[in-house]
Structure formats: C-alpha cells, structure tokens
Length: 287
Image 1 (cartoon, one colour):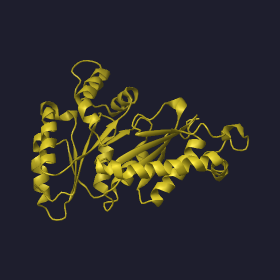
Image 2 (tube, rainbow, N blue to C red):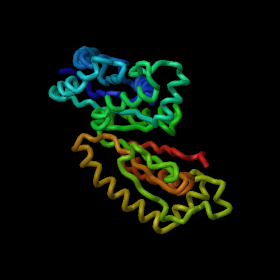
Image 3 (cartoon, rainbow, N blue to C red):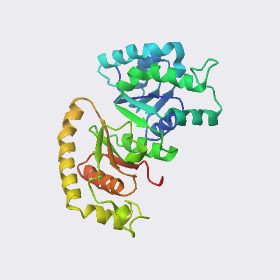
Image 4 (cartoon, rainbow, N blue to C red):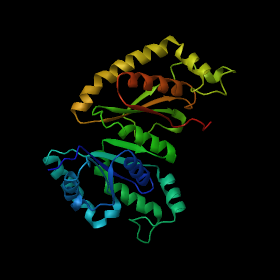
C-alpha cells in the first residue's frame, strides 16, 4: 500500500495535549496531519508513501471530525488489512483539569451544544471509549506540564532504529492516586521511609543521600533484580503482541523519596538492556 514505516494516530480528549504531542512528533521527524477526516486516512498514507524520504506519518484524529468520526474504525481496519499497523496514542486528563484548560483557552468544545462544558467532555469520553481501549499508549496529562509531556513523547518516538519495546517509568505518591495510564504498578512502601530521617526529609529521591539510603536497603536491590527479570521476560511477549509502549508506575506514600530513587534506578537498568526509557516524577514537588 505504501512505503510508510511508522504510522502514529494521535487522539484523545480536548485539552489533554494533542497539539503538543503533534508538535513534538514533527520535531522528531514525523510528517504530521492535524484534524484529518478518517475517510482520508488511507489516501494520505498512500500519497505520503510515494514521497521521497517520507516514512513516518502522524495523524491527529479526534472529536473535531464530527459526523466523519464513526468512519475511523473502518479506515483503521483497511490499513491493518494492507499490512500497516497504526500505533494509537491516546491523551487524557481529569475532567477538572480539562475544564480549567478549556476555559483558559477560551475556545468552544467541539461537542458542546448549549449545555455545560462538562457535558461536552462526557460526550467526548463516550465517543472515544472504544478507541481508548484499543490504544497502544495512554498518556494521562493531569499532572504533567507541557515540558514533561514533550519529553515523554520525544523520548518515546525519537529513536527510529528501535523497533522493540519503549518504556516510561513514572514515580508517584499513593496519596495522590495511582496513575490511570499505568500498565504495571509497584509499591515501594515496604522500604524504610527517608521521611523519618531528619537529615533526609527535606531532600528528594534525586539527591544522592536519599538515593544511597534507599538503595542500601537489601530489599531494594532484591526488588530491582527480580523486577528487572520480570520486565525482560515480558518484553519479547509484549512485542509479539504488537505492544510497543509500557508504562511502569513506581509508588510510595508521597512520591518524593523512595519511588523517585527506585524509578531512576529501574530506568537505568532498562536502558542498559537497550530499552529506550524515560523517567517521569509525577508528584515530585507537591509536598
């Protein structure tokens, strides 16, 4: 059908970061088409495939397509039948954050018709429900700023030579809730808490004294060894099932000490095995 090597479909909630994601993908070498009617997806892939040097395509498709949106599933099936598997990136955030962002942008929601803004988001969630379930990568931007989102997308898609698994390791605090986009969740609350050490309390897991304190616990190294083996065992299986993105959430009470230090260590181990990995500290600075 085409010479496209990589096709990324960007979708998700209004205000969740689709525009930022599209800009980053363009920066790392994708040809990006925003707000493309689904019926034109196959033709766009074929046209770009005939162009010299154009092998990576990112398409933003969302609720703005209006009456054309229901045709998306059929368009994706046609691409898969032709041997091209789109990678679906779905962006979301909490209703509270989406409402705040939309009000700040002073733009109407595409699905609001005289009702409340929140009603528009509820309609949008229902419209995108099946697509979210089929997503290869779900990014919750509730607690991410623009720069953190850009770093996550850039790290995930910048390495064009790696066709294997790509990972995001997210540290978080359980008191702020488990990341909704996590594929795997690990709890670091079995380790001694640096919060109860006076000299360590004001520091974070990025500081060497805290890192050394956490990593010096025998259980910490044992966990990293075992978890590393588990992830390496799953890597080939995920790739065989065409799952290319893995989000690993590492939590502690407040997301400041143990989860941060252990996330950094796990990210280092994954990169040592050739798995492109980005580490994001979701709740660092909230205490």
